[in-house]
Length: 227
Image 1: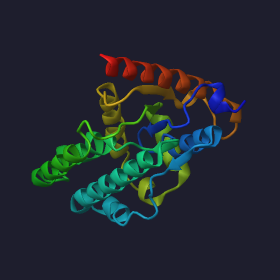
Image 2: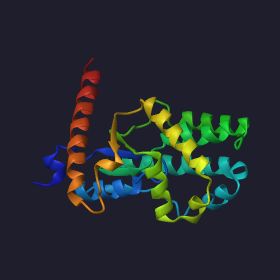
Image 3: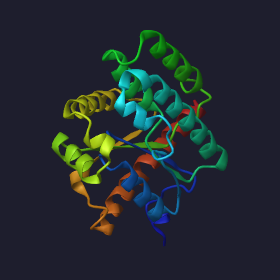
Image 4: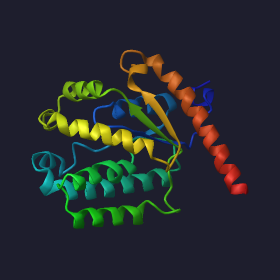
């Protein structure tokens, strides 16, 4: 029996991995996809034309970066659902507006006009009954020190040169965001509870939780449709 059947995870499931920068979203995405024989939807960092410029000048490039991310994630979300599911997605479309755009607006590195334009576009694209939401959002969490250590160890220069205060603010905003998130079911997983690099078997307890959450979620949706 394969792991997907063992833990009763439907073949058309769509699972999104969320969490602050450096928490291990890409590692989790690839590990789950490999275990379940799902496809991956990975954040395209290397081909992003604004990311390097953004880290040099937040105020100049924050709006451009967020619009780029919104467009790319929306296209990817549409592709996933048209394909019929069976995907693990690295970072959700909800984080862009709930954390990044709002943080730059609050800090004065995105103008009010740009922020309103961005949020209006986001709501028109995503916050409608027609937008297909994931079956489950897995939120990866850990201590701030653990997150900073991971950012430093992966060695991206534009991240290593970013002030610690920026990562601390983002970390706190993520905690506030997830505590108020309700667009789809959430499974919170602490990064200290597994080691997907050194202990391949540590993925199975996560799969068991995923299967349980998705089964319960689909039962709830079925009951709502019957009402």
